Structure formats: structure tokens, C-alpha cells
Length: 190
Image 1 (tube, rainbow, N blue to C red):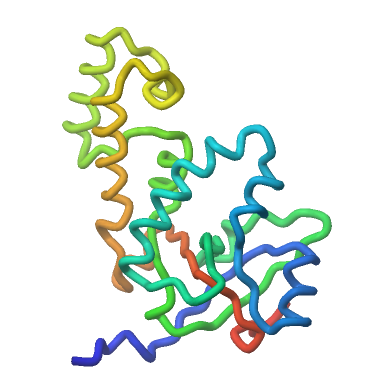
Image 2 (cartoon, rainbow, N blue to C red):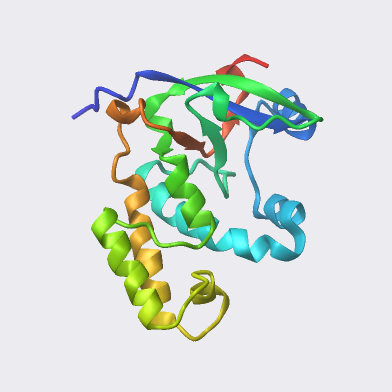
């Protein structure tokens, strides 16, 4: 059975540096490699690689990685969320919806902060009470120390909620997107 969203196009925006644009011009496709992340974040790259690796593991089950892709490229469904830096350009991209992984950027920011994603307000309150009872005042201690392996598993399991509302009907909420690659022919404007 063919998914009716397979041929539906979605418009996304991303801010990319000159090196990415040069790669697209030269090769026609751009992929993110692990080395790029390590180089960009240096000493703290492992802090980013923890959630990035989790994302890759989950996302490739939703949209298989093409050959050459290692990590996702971050995009948004609304131009207003794009950070624009000196040597970068904003790309407007039109791509088949079946190549896109959508998620709430506020939830993703919690994951990047190695934080728990609560189901609802009650769950959040229960989690906060549990941290307080355990004497944990900085949630990042769960990840940054080896003292709380059971809580680390609980936090990581909660991250699955990132994809709870991964569908086109939720484009009205704040959405971030990921692609495994950018192809030159997908760029509408830069």
C-alpha cells in the first residue's frame, strides 16, 4: 500500500555555511558526518553525540538513511526559527514529505539538555518530586555522573515522546525537521 504522503511536498528552511553550499555545488548532495560534529563542538562533542546518536537510532527506523549519511541535517517548518550567522545562507527547500522527520523543537531542546520529556504536567510533577527525594538538584547530574543508571534509562526512554505527534496535522505547532541529506535540486532559493 502506498502512503498518500509519499509524494506530498513540504517546504523547510535551514541555515547552512558556505562549505555546505560549496559541497552542494560540487557534489549535488550534502551529508553530515560524525567528524563534522566533533570538529564543530570540540571538547563538548560527546555531550551532543549522546542525543544525536539516540536520534539517529530512532529516526533511521522512520526514514532510512541514504548511503553516505551519518547524522541528520536540522531544518524548520517556519523561517522565523532559523538562526542566521555571518558566513551562512538560509536555504528554502522543497522535498517529498516521506524523506522528512518532523518533531517539536522545544522537546528536542530538552533532549539536547539531557532532560526528561514528561507525558503531561502530572508526569512532570511526579518526576520533579522523585528528583527532589533523591537529592538531585541538577538534572544533568543523571547523565554527567555514573550514580544514577536507573534514572538515566528513565530519561532516555522518555525521549521517545519526541515523535509522539510526528504528522502533517501538527505543522501548526512549532516544528523542527531533519533530513538525512540535502540535494541541490531540492533548493528553491538561497
